Length: 143
Image (cartoon, rainbow, N blue to C red):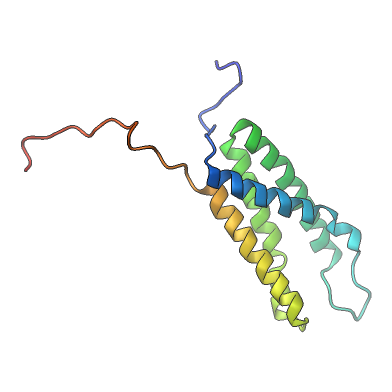
């Protein structure tokens, strides 16, 4: 067994993966304190406490999973971080359909775009270097 405890799920991180992990880490940090906002007063528009707690939990999962994914190259941790970010951003989607100021909707759209970018970059497989791959076998029978 490998002294590091490596598994088949361990991956080497490309620069794209690292950018995605960094974005996800920052989004996770932003989501951590969401539950401290508190639920809106009756008659006010805002996310219910259950959504704020869900966002905080997703933020915590993201921060921990990104840290493990970066340090160990764990594909499972990276997929967990991506899933937590997807759940977190899905809790914000209903706000697009509420009567909110345009600035709030713009910020939500930016958050959605950054989250999707982070997820795609985290899950993008590393490109293999063609100079290190063996050449395909030559088949003289098929011309």
